[in-house]
Length: 629
Image (cartoon, rainbow, N blue to C red; front, side, top):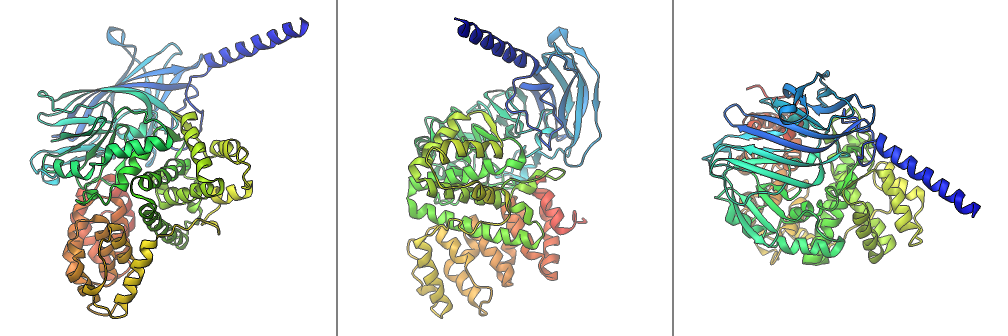
């Protein structure tokens, strides 16, 4: 009896301590120090955003009221938000007629992080309202004139919040470690349609007024808005595509297997938890292949190849619905947890849909990119950035957007799969997504879960030294997995025949996929006899191909071999394509020679107005600043 009383006393004390802790501390996820955010969620944390906004294409600004529902500790005195170049009109607390203005302070601006907005509050405050207008040069916002769109009749706006650009259009705690739900009311000029990373309309509103709701909590980098002359086409019961009218039919065909992709993903790693999965095809200036905004992936038109050959990008963005959106890197130093898992998941989706031979071609191409990037980074003195766990404090987190996070991360997970066996590794991953759903993850927490739920459970012979080598050491381990594609062996034989004198029109290329063509073009030797580029182009039409991946690889060879017949195409591609993955290597190859650098600068003068900040920020640095007009 005495032991039972002692147990009850201990239990009651533990419950009391937990209740006290809950009362003192807001219920955010992990209390992580994020070097790229001014937020202090330990004191006051945002739980919900209600956004009321008007989009003005004439001034290229958004005027809005952001109402933040917050949770505070008992002695909270301040709410700190991230902002960058926002014009703050006033700040109030309360709601409706009980709103009253409070004091706030906008801190010193940092060129990367912007300015902290420190708002005076009391512990009882539940709602904070910020009335503000975005700046004309807000870095997340890409305003397009009608001529820059597919239809050429209406303007277009889209946002790109990742990594830390949400603060340029919404005053928010802009850290991947802080999640919140949101609602929005958005006014746009009729007949334009507004879409967000939330529940979306499928028809235009006659008066340009749209309402949105996102019930699942998301981090700020997944806030997204697009406004344009858009149409919707259904693909499956929970999938569809938005695009400009002149593009919608091609887009619907290209993404015709979208519903099958979602089903394949669910069969691998559990239920899709975001209700709908739709795609929005953006104008060409979009700086990425895709952006995994929940419920509405933003996609580049460069994947509209006409033969569904580039839809692995869609599989990648879909996979983010689990890795990234569902389980999110706690800070941008842990970026590989988003992208490495997503590439691994993408490969598994493609294998499930199209077979192992097909997915191994994709993996082989990615491995080629990785080896080249590791060597380039070593030559540039950036070897430290070839580690999976990064140290980006004081730097732009975009510096971490390299193939290291994507492809070294993928190969690490593939290494674990090969060590554990596929069945055991699948069980681990499915459980990982379920156990950590709507939570954030640090590299160190992942290592702990890996140790507990896979290595110990399956009694694997993978020690701490090997894990540390993959995650914390630069370069690639000696025993890195090597994807092998039998199809590429055949491609290599045909290339050898061509180099040995066989005419291009006698090569056996029957049935080659775009991935085989990509491997062929990439593998062309540094030294080619005069006329070989012309022969290849006349036979296979590389300069006129509609496949952007193959075209980009060909244009790299055009620069290397000074194939002047394709220079007009090179300029057109650079001026009308904003995807950073393509721009960086092409400009990078051009500037290796004085003549090429001059050409790059001339092209960039014409192209820069078409690029998003994410792209110009990179290319400006490569070319030594903005071009003089």
